Length: 361
Image (cartoon, rainbow, N blue to C red; front, side, top):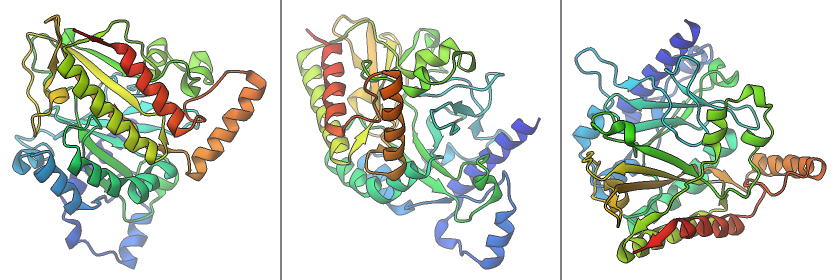
């Protein structure tokens, strides 16, 4: 019961934060005192609301009324759904297959994933200090500028960012995350598709690296299903016509160059393979790899986005983690790791992985 209360409280906090106008919020001493003793139902506000509105309206061409309707309560139904496993990077649903998704990592930080009831958007927490400070201070501005000039980017569309303006007991003890990104759900339309059970998802990273979630955590603590999701293997090819393959590779090359310049490592390609007969809806601008590229053999449609680009090598915690794992590798001889490599080397291996997946027709 305690877990469900926490989940419901966090979902309500996120909903209120997305519908609250931050321009009308004024921070006060009394508000800070009251907020400090909050464990679960914390106050959240949208960060850089006008910047994200420009991204949604001018670049991605979202209908704002439809966007906000995804977060409003209708017919007594909550807009945010406690969900089972989506297959997103490093994530595991809880024991009863409902509720907040949680990921197990080398530093024991829990991430949460929630989806909107209509399946259009996913809310992901950024619980690590080095992740959300990097996103806020270093990446957000360049991400906005990059999206303006690369509307067909394969980088996942981040549509909002909410955070807590106050320090609370819940955030200090780690039971309630205070920073959340809202992003498109590349699985949009699956729930209503008669072929939904035939959709396939792959979370892909260069497989030669050593992954702490898979290789450091004692085996009894992590299920085989969880281990498999940490670094999937796509045992097939992306069968693409030349024009589609060239535009896809150009987009991935530009995206990963942007991430390399930002000193980012450990991102992944989230690939969805859908039966060719399916006609799932899409959000916003007609972007090929969001609508679904038809395979050259006529069997599948492919969707894909690049996810999890929040680990920057120059951030202090990332450097400390790299040093810790490098020390471990001296003893354990586990080999190179995605978070200890350089940004240019990771990009090189990531591009090699993607190119080897593509078969041109």
